[in-house]
Length: 317
Image 1 (cartoon, one colour):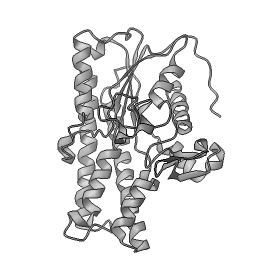
Image 2 (spheres, rainbow, N blue to C red):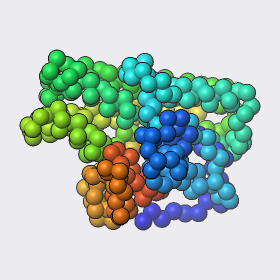
Image 3 (cartoon, rainbow, N blue to C red):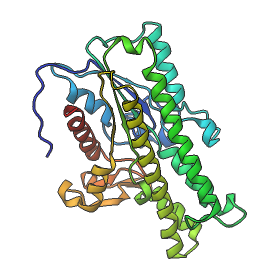
């Protein structure tokens, strides 16, 4: 459903990915959920994730060399969300990459490098939880955008975007990075307020109040929308600041494809776009009809849609 022209000459020789479980292709030190269902590939899905698929699709005679630094559970900067989980955030992921690059351990960069940064779900969820969880707020969590705690949450979202600005600029300003032609694709956050993880939390906090449950989920949507809007604006500013650099740097807005799957699932042959395929230690028999594999992660079929849509986005740059 995504036709492409065949490239005769490759634009890139390697793909470098930073992010969280949506991009972690199997080097998660904690083993996802400590559940054997996930152990075969080591990622939070039942199949191959988009980085491996995209690396293959962007290659001409062979897949791009993939350097995937993403970690399950990662934030942009743990100091901003105070999780204390000691999971490598994207700031640290980038530093690890730069250290390896400077030491000469990274190869396959002679043609060009495509950098992808996809982060935001975990910090946004944590900011939302801290604002809405009654147990963290004296028995009463946020319900409306006008609430003071929600206004504080929006301020923290802006901090997250500024952290992304720092990370992207830090990467682009590195002298060794600039020895190779480089492109940058920064990815927005999909609407995960429809996922079972967030719906279950909202239901718990609302305590039977259906309207409150809807209001709480709407707050998460608002935070995601704010993050994406500010992220798109920030990456555009970075690009416009130095037009003399002949590079591709842009935001891939995943919400266009994601929202299309939510509103027109039949177009993608999906029948369940809110519930999990894997639930109560049982795997559904029709995984290809689901958007979500588990409580928040996409199914292998959706991973393919993501990779193809990203490829189309990149090819027209």
